[in-house]
Image (cartoon, rainbow, N blue to C red):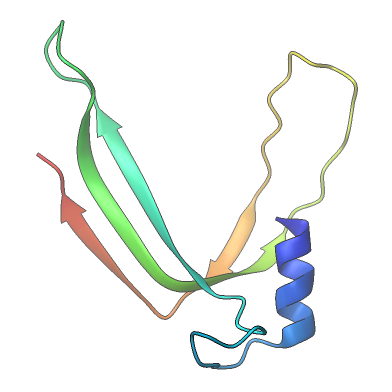
Length: 88
């Protein structure tokens, strides 16, 4: 995330044509999954589509050598528009 944030900050958060090399925006799709009956696969419950996203802020991270820990950190995005669809 950090290289994307640095590149976007360097290029500026301005509108650019889709083919421009300095256009750092992309589309992001997030799937919310749900459990179904036993023996059936997991199904898509909701699908969020965010258009022309770019990271705005990234939380700091503490690095360690613990291979068992899953590291999470907060990222703020800006986007032009979004849409929500239902999967089932």
